[in-house]
Length: 172
Image (cartoon, rainbow, N blue to C red; front, top):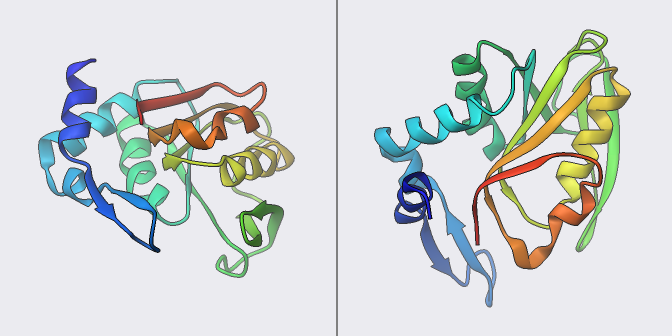
């Protein structure tokens, strides 16, 4: 295990029975509150690829993706839940465990051929990440990868990212 992985795991708090009984929630707020740990995560994610844009997925993905974009010298593009962006958008719907959801991005968020890294806090079932990949591609950009702070391997979300490089700083 790397020093970075140890640092991350030391700053993730387990919260039992949240948001419902039987779920063990992985809380990253202690990591975000520690300058050294947060900065190390941002530096690592920013150094993965040379890119034009970093996409952050609503909402916790914004917390990581915006400073990663700044550190990488790239633009930041939010991917939001349907109805939250003020200008013309493209949308992508996907299935969740209990229903479906739709995400959107502004139509003019990317230049043709922009190299894009998608950043989020957690890769769980992979539905949101998979939909974001498709949305970015439909907008004319090239997805160079998906990068997350933490991957919940038992949910097998990586399997939904066929043909996309997926990078997780820690896998639990």
